[in-house]
Length: 131
Image 1 (cartoon, rainbow, N blue to C red):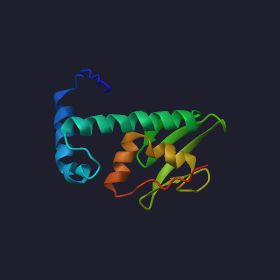
Image 2: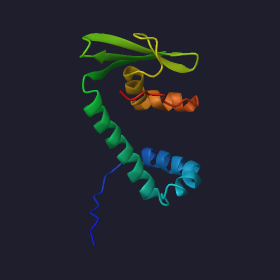
Image 3: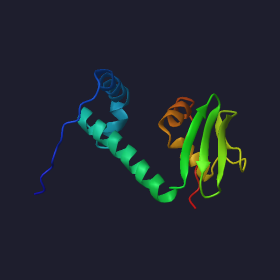
């Protein structure tokens, strides 16, 4: 039988309080995914962040966030050697370069936690096409 190894991570108390509140709000749908404890919820959340970073590092290592604006995010595309703005238009993220809501730049923008959080609050999900 494989042995699970656990390590302790210290978090600020307000972060733990926020995580607990989030867990309580989402507890019932999480049960359907096999997540039945606060620890399981936090581990799943951390895994999603690690996986998103791994995918972005592999699929788009040439993209980086330059900064946030009031209505979007500015991204550096080293492959194109240019700056690309992704703006919120009519409640959707739209790439100013190709006027698309499903390109790699929009997908990268959704991977930025602050952008994802705002779009999620608006009830919007990423519509990214695989290349």
